[in-house]
Image 1 (spheres, rainbow, N blue to C red):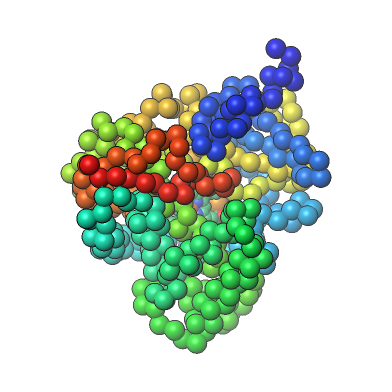
Image 2: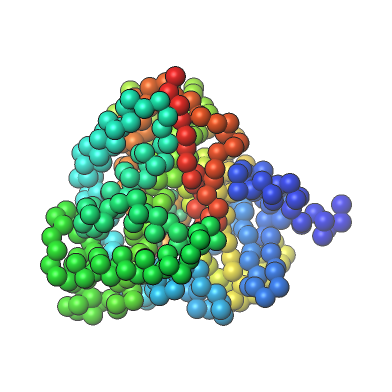
Length: 402
Ligand code: HEM
């Protein structure tokens, strides 16, 4: 095969990659570990697929997280891009320190009874239903409630409408009126911040109240950084964990032998802990790492990534790399060691990892116990995956009770 044909992914794998990216990723790892897509009028995008490369580049200072280095490119909604995911040091260090304290594992562990209480309440509501959508009925409201509790979002704003407004921002092509969605989002953030300034009580951790005070009293954060950070945390605190529950339950339904191993495990069991890690690895909720671009030219696999070109680190591919994991396509809830990259690696390692792990450890056994005998309501290859690039998650997970 000529070298050029070898580096062009087969059309069928490309077409199917939203539904099932793993054959495409395996092709990239094998034939084009640093694959570049060039489209007229757009910045080049490099896709990096092997575990060792992805891990090394996740903490390589030659890659910048500042989208301002790519002329005309803006990865998020306008006016809401000044947050830690899009920052290099020293701004990154300052913003991360302000947010981090609310997510330390010791503080997060205290939420366990609350997570279990909300999860049981949601299951009570669907107890007598034959048809259940595990995303809309359980994963979305549970994970949104938790991030709202940490941020101090009042209950009247914790609604499906608020969730839709946020989610619209990551798939603007799929909504009828993106300009209106943008206005709704800014109005929502205004309402939140104005409420905090007016001394609105929310109890709990109230991270947003603390950030507003840090900005107002010591100038530690600008107004744009405050809004951007509130937006970021509401979105990633919910969308990722929701997909851990959705992708994870789908994997367990498709591997009943592995689900059976988890039956009756309590939240502190070591098998449950390895299972959560394995579900994070097997179908990673953050499929591609967030924005990065080359700050200087980088040589990789005989090619040159030029300064200003975008570099997409394929976490979902790294986590299935056969050079790093034994039998990576097999789900094994007892897998050890399991040094997956589902939460990233290095200076941008996920701040919410302890919260996500705890929500998974509470949700999986509870669902296995309370759902009873359920099946997928449609074939697995017809399930609707959301058309987002960074995130891998289902729009719905329809189940039927037998
Ligand atoms: C299963 C759930 C989750 C997964 C798989 C996940 C995954 C990730 C990954 C891969 C990164 C690094 C991205 C990169 O380097 O490009 C990241 C960063 C981050 N995550 Fe998570 N995350 C999850 C849950 C959460 C939760 C619940 C929060 C809570 C707010 C959160 C907040 C963040 C923040 C703020 C960052 C940026 C850190 C930085 O740039 O320094 N994540 N996450």
